[in-house]
Amino acid sequence: MKFFTGVMMSTLLMATITSISYAGVIIGGTRVIYAGDKKEASLSITNPDDLPYLIQSWIEPPSTSGGKAPFIITPPLYRLDKKQQNVMRIVLTGNLAQDKESMFWLNIKSIPSVAPRDNTLQVAVKTRIKLIYRPSALNKSGPEEQADKLKWQRVGDRILVTNSTSYYMNFNEIKVGASKIDDVTFVAPGSTSLYRLPTGGTSIQVEFKIINDYGGIGVTHVARL
Figure 1 (cartoon, rainbow, N blue to C red):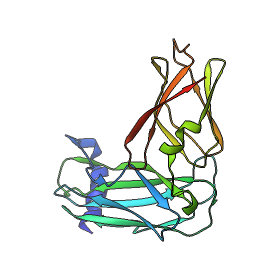
Figure 2 (figure 1 turned 180 degrees about the horizontal axis):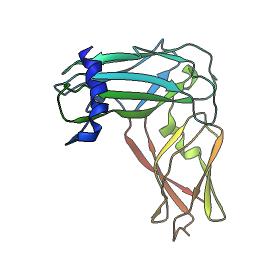
Figure 3 (figure 1 turned 30 degrees about the vertical axis):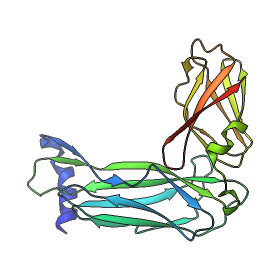
Figure 4 (figure 1 turned 90 degrees about the vertical axis):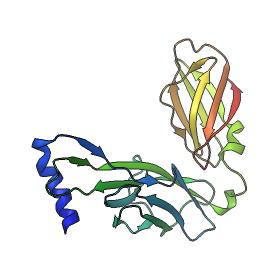
């Protein structure tokens, strides 16, 4: 009860705040790849601090699709004591396409405890990372190996990328000539994405980098418009 009392008190003390402390749990990855031939995927959460946290996790479908994500995550809500680590397990509970990847959002909220008389606001931090389901038939390859199959074309003052592969292509950067495109995201399997060309982006050469399964940045790929 003291833990939850601390969380409630942190809200009540907002009028007399003297400092702000941000949650400091460490999430063991920037994305989760759920291999279709496995029974589950996992993700570690580590608490390096000297105070406990309340950890809440849930999975959502992409914002445009609606519905409910066909996964359960355990435990969905738990206390993570100081200097401890917990492994959350993700289990598929429904059917997904077996000829292409599917992407969802894994949300993790960490709420730090606070002493009842501590004149400090402890801020809850929500982190959202990608959960990508990869069917077993696609395990022999990956986005990096398929990236050169992307097609690029200029459409007015924008650039259109077409992904005919079965993999999500998460971009680290896209450059047209020497000019970098702002706010690059990803292109889904069998889909397209449209980005505004940067000022001075008149070159016919495109350079781009893909984020790999481990959150690292891949090699530079070169294509022509």
